[in-house]
Amino acid sequence: MSQPLLRLENLTVHFPVTRGTVLRRTTGFVRAVDGVTFDIGEGETVGLVGESGSGKTTLGRAIVGLVPPTAGSIELRGVELSALRGRRARRARSQIQMVFQDPFASLDPRWPVARSVGEPLRLHRVGTRRERHERVLELLELVGLSRRMADRFPHELSGGQRQRVGLARALALRPALVVADEAVSALDVSIQAQILNLLQRLQQELGLAYLFIAHDLAVVHQISDRVAVMYLGRIVELAPAVDLYREPRHPYTISLLSANPVPDPSIEAGRERIVLPGDPPSAAAPPPGCRFHTRCWLRERLGDAEICRTQEPPLREAGPGRSVACHFADEAASSPVTRRAVDLAGGRS
Image (tube, rainbow, N blue to C red; front, side, top):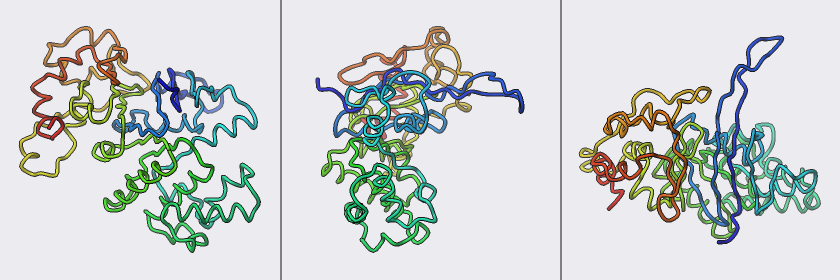
């Protein structure tokens, strides 16, 4: 098996909770990312899904280097990024870029498009000023924008155009991996389709790999080779996209798929929707045992299994290329509730 492009090993990001205004003391930690392990191959798209507060954005920012990890490792082509310093660190970090959720907030409103797109080239001292300007114009054309856009400001652009500018900026240094954090969620549906098609075209032309963070399961299904499901700082299921949507094995994944709307009204009317009780527990005080057990519909049907309350399930292999963190993954996959929620949604058809 070839070496992956990116490898995360037990990656952890904890934020301290402090009290006091003068003598600030740490009273606990928010476990935003709590021991995540997975990899991304060359030219692969891995989708990352989960509800708000699950740690998806923090994980993406840690990979890019915007948030320092508390523990664990991030390897790029076998090289541990935290061990690099100076020029080597800058060169390695340039290989991982990010496209942000809000295309307006991620661009400086005082800078024209040309300066925003060309800033990474200037910071990394790539070429002469003339060469950098020509590269900016090439990047604008690459993402489907006219060269005339170079002199415009963000407020003069539409949301889709601004997101294309953000993507052009991310591609300026010819990265190997792009972290797309909710890159289409703020856009109209028709514009979403355009950006998704653009991402797929660029992947084919440039050999890019993506970590695609999103809430929309239909979008993730369309663009991803594999999908990782995150809950309360942990990966609970990781599988090829086709397998995960056809036969989910974690109760949380099943509940997410049951909430995914289906365009056919007749099918939608007959589906069983799994409604999870309450809100996710606080990441500052995750429950013991399985982190999902306080909201798990399967645990109720199994008669309040004690193992769920006392032992945290490891992310274990559950078939070719897939892993799941559930003590009763087989029961979840074969449950009548799963069949009614996922089969009617077209997951296994």
